[in-house]
Every structure is written in C-alpha cells, then in structure tokens.
Image (cartoon, rainbow, N blue to C red):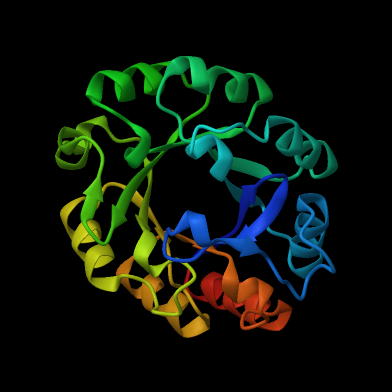
Length: 239
C-alpha cells in the first residue's frame, strides 16, 4: 500500500481541507511544522517518513483565482526525490502546459472537466502518464458522465476522491472503493478522503486498493513514524 501525503495550497499557505468546503478552509496546524509555509510542511513530512510521492491540490488554481506554480517549483527543487502529483483544476491544454513544462505529474480532476473533448485533449498533451481523479461530492459524481462510465479512456492510475470524507474523520468510502475495484480490476485505484489510521489502511489493502492519499492523520499524529514503518514492513511481508 503506497501512502501519499497531501498538501492543499491556498494564498501561498497550506490549509486544512475539510469535506470539500473550500470557503471554510483554515491554515493547517501540524505537529510536523511550527507554521503553514509549504516548504516547512513538506520538510516535516519528509522528516517523518521517506515518502516517494506528494499530492498537491492548488486550490487557487482549482477555483480559477491564481496558481502556485512558483511554490511547487520551489518544493520540487528542495525535494527532487519526490514525484509531485498536481491537481490545479485543469480544464484545458493551455492551463495544463505550464505544469507539464515543470515536469510534475498532472492529476486531471473530473470536477474541473467540461466534456470528453477537453479531457481527451489534455490526456493526449500529457508528456508523462497522467492520473485521473474521479471526484464525488454529497451530490454524487462531478464531471462528464462518459468519463465515469467508459474506463477505456482512463489511465492506469485512478484516484477515487470522496470529498465529503476529506478531513471528516469518517473513514474512507469503502463501499464505493470496493465497487470500483470489483468493476474495473485492471486499474490501480488510490483512495482519497477520510483515512484515519492503520486500521483504515489495512481495510483498503484488503480491498486491493494500491495507494491512499492522507493529510490529517499525518499532521495530528495518528499516523506517526512508527506506524508508517510498521505498515510498510507489513506490506513487504504480505508481498
């Protein structure tokens, strides 16, 4: 099970995401850093555990009010060992291109995509294998229905983003993840939203989920270095 830490950027700072209610996000309070500066948060994460990937949600870009390209470039320079996954609300090739030039791995979020034409154009433009995020809110799936229903257009790696579970302490949406895993067994699924502890990680592993995106449990100490190391050793043993 791959554990991928998440940071959410807004106005140059890392914020605490909760249930996708972006207007109510506040600066993060983390045991890993004395402030919410992105570089200090990432330094803290890397000090906690040698993560190999980092998921970044650029909330300003997602809401079409700016972007954090220079911040991400700084993080990339400071931590070249990290593969950075970036969701910047991509809705066109023009929005995508500066990030492709940076060399990060783009996450195409379904909530930001108007139609299949836009998705296919962006997928074709990606110089690296992109990641698809299928985004779900309280109202259900957000995005073009053909994208949800036609797995032939999906890349290998697919995030199931359950926004109502993000920062909620509800646990992951196991029923949705199980359904997706059973229906599309050829994909590598990543769970996003609600993972609280090692027990949740083990439950996801039992379903065959490849990886999990986590923020809150890393920052509040529920998943500490010892727990992460034990989980990694357990995964190796099961392999």
